[in-house]
Length: 303
Image (cartoon, rainbow, N blue to C red; front, side, top):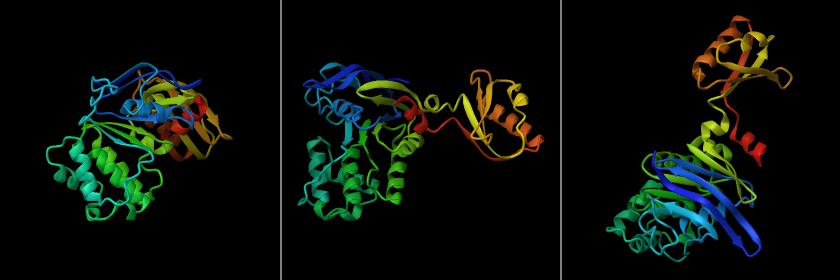
């Protein structure tokens, strides 16, 4: 997979404050990539530098092979949804999007504006003043402007923050549809959402990169699974003897069986099936089986 975004030794200072400190990671073409971290971790600063809104103090960024600090370098190449995007209240939505499409140099501005509103399911807002819309509608209009022209790279900062569950689900589905066609970078505090959507992620804390990798690596999906036990003695030694098993332990008062396995030697579905089969043979009742650990657990462990 070729790289859509390359970040090397990226740092940003504001006076004596170091907001981002020597961060390096790569985003593959067509990936959905998550930026994770607590408040003050440097996510928004890193996000802003990738978009060209801020210039680095040190290090380099390449987005589709170009330097975002160069004037006009990202024009027509990226779409951006800022976290606190504010639309001019008096402008009708259609006129605003058409104007923004024209500024982006798109050949058919009105058509692009209408198609973008269709994608976010708001075609009826064409003549509505931006200031008359709810927060959720305004958020989707802001996302529509990011999608005009079908840019190869899309940056989304907190795309579902403040949305009701139905609209948030629709936005997540839209992000899924972008994957593979565009490279999508999402910054969010919603770790369950990022775990569901992202192929890879970077965890930041206090301006530094704590860990970067695929979501499978982050959550241990290729090395660990858990079985929730309802009732019955677990034959722990027999589980440990299964081919490919590295370790097996019981947690939470013997109600959770945690199995770590060699992902290079055995497929997850094989060892999970054999483990569950063994438990059933020994008359152990099972409530659920899950691969890996939650992304939230990993982030709390690292930050």
